[in-house]
Image (tube, rainbow, N blue to C red; front, side, top):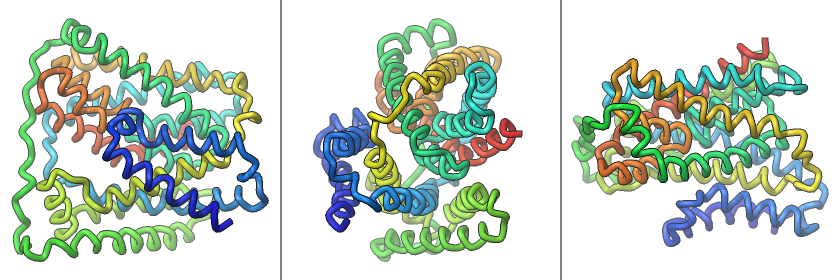
Length: 385
């Protein structure tokens, strides 16, 4: 058991460190690398079939997500956001995704139970409005089983990779032909100005203070969630965590930490630690899955559902962009920020020869990250009625 815990906790940290040295890991995604490692070890060895290890994986999954949410959300500098074009482009993107997810629920549910496919739809909302952390949080909140979660994440990796290839090969000429090509650069926020009353001489201990604050938020959220009935306790835990974490991002010393990290062009320490917990969560799931027992033919409707969400939402987003007079470059960056997640935004901005669009895309991605939990759980409750 001790050897397994060392393997489980150190592997995500090692992959994150190697991603800084080997750029191909970042391009492929550390999560994809961890999934491959976990699945290979789980399915090519008998080591992980020892009794008690599955319970360990479940316990780690239950702890990682509540810890990752405050750590990552507190790293968002909301006071710096430019809300003009980001709001218009973001709303069109969110609307397109929500419409296709709800429509696809009725088209692709097939013989799945309404509750089960409502869980799939809720997690899809988390993926394509926020990202990996929302996906894990909502899956935890709606009680999704690990097998379905693995189906969704595996198909998502395949389809979003195809979508990125499509964007790189055809996105620029296609979007500029269908929509106006000119993009107005977003003004980058000033990240070096200290907050009133804050001194840069005492900046070194501040990042460490965000870690106990995140732990306190997780504990308070858990205690408050126990006041609700068992059927609502887990969804309320996720909602309370999200709300308290957003509020914490406005605390002066938290904002100071974020500005110090931005001035050095680094991720805040809390965000990095939170990302580690997300990777640990994904890695624990991969190690707990025996793919030889998966019925891929029984989950193909999820694959078609994900394909429908991505490409049908793209068409709707283009139509909405024409109505809102949005340019093609901004619309493409918005789509990639939501479908592939904000880390891919700089790649597309460079493809469009307009690096100022990076700010716009990441801002939309952060907005989606903040509202993803709310939207995902709202869709789950709506469809499960």
